[in-house]
Length: 354
Image (tube, rainbow, N blue to C red; front, top):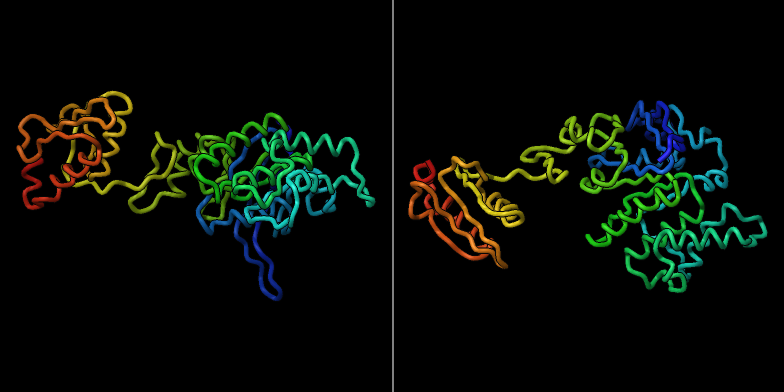
């Protein structure tokens, strides 16, 4: 990552202009800076203005106020060809390119550099080969785009954008239709591309975990028409993430780096979990799912978990009722037992757990 700013928003107001009606401002006083070699995630609640901001940043709609600068030049003054040589955009919507091979699709990225005769030169071929390799689709170059999976198609469209040799690569929800494994692969690829291409990569996403774990910088669109830019750790630590996303019965989990739904814990239903590593981690997960809360050493109820697949567990403690004591195999039986303890005799719950 360098200190060179390739894309900047300076006091930008983003929104819509309609004929014979006042302009509608969605975001105001937006100041952002994307540096070469930086991975930036754009996050925020639905309807907060992420898409509006993205369209404004790439020049698809003019700002209502302020300026968007691409390499220090107002983006609205650049011709489409000049803009495409420095900024590439990949959208979520599938692109209908007809019966074209992967290589032919990626070659479309060279159009901003072609003369009106459209002749390909050695540099064009080199740029296409490099883009195929960087996006990890070199082995797909002769296949038809229509025959590929969603994950493969997404990589090909990234390769097409890379063939433009952009200083800024903007992706709108690139992981939207991918399964978990393909999301992880794409995340790793984008992180690698910031190093191999030195491009600034800006992507919008609803995947908060990805945004906080992978990004060098997060642009957080709030519910108050503002955008906050900072390192992911700063946004999480300051409480900005919680303030933006958390709602009733929801909270930010620092360890998981994501928003979680608060457990509907039964009042007073607490248990101390003993075990090692992953056994204890997933036992506590099961305890919470059952409506109980993990507690410290002073708790009357003690849950011991032993290694194994499935694991063995024993619920015991000092002075606990016989109805609560039990042992079993597997987390499913544990959750069932804990839920039974908390709900089988509701009127006796306080007495049993006091």
